[in-house]
Amino acid sequence: MGALVAAAVVAVIVRATLVDFHRIGSESMQPLLAPGDGIMVDRTAYRGGEVRRGDVVVFDGRGSFLPYQRPDAVDALLRALHLSGGGTSYVKRVIAVGGDTLECCDADGMLLLNGEPLEEPYVYDGDAASDIRFVATVPEGRVWVMGDHRAASADSRALLGAPGGGMIAVERILGRVTSVVWPLDRAAALPREGE
Image (cartoon, rainbow, N blue to C red; front, side, top):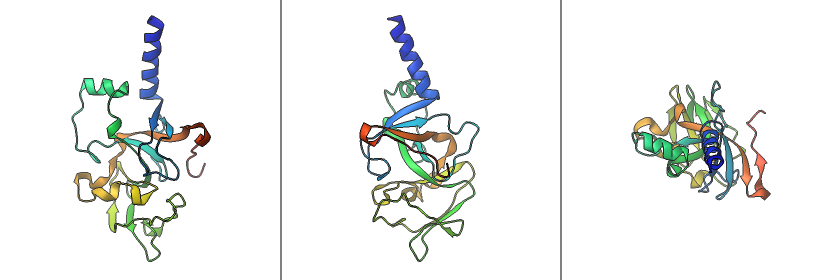
């Protein structure tokens, strides 16, 4: 019995600090990630490193995508054990980081990142870069996120008028998606752009 408890404690520590597993529940990241996919998340990806444009991240949406909730010790423990909190985690792609200006769209329908057209080969076939016109400057310490399946994604665009403007605080990012591990026929590593 003691070995079982010790193994459970080690598993919780590993999932809370090193790597984690999440299941995709929506179509917003297709074609890269499909509903039902199991993904591995590197919880150490941003310790001492910066979030990069193009990273696919898991973040806690409280305070941006969801109303802010004050955390407490019980909530933190239940989240670490993955007994709660699944409804507050989101998976999206980082499109812009602190200091960037992002605009929709140029005459060709492309997003403009700092005035330059943004090549987005990952966008779901047939989707526009965005059906919502906007101009947003991302403050330092925040990122702008969007789903790859733009027509099926509620993301930073949907929260432009809300507090925080739909931009995610870097400290709310739980980690970077590194691979699909389930189902086995879709298992594949997800390297960072440029690697």
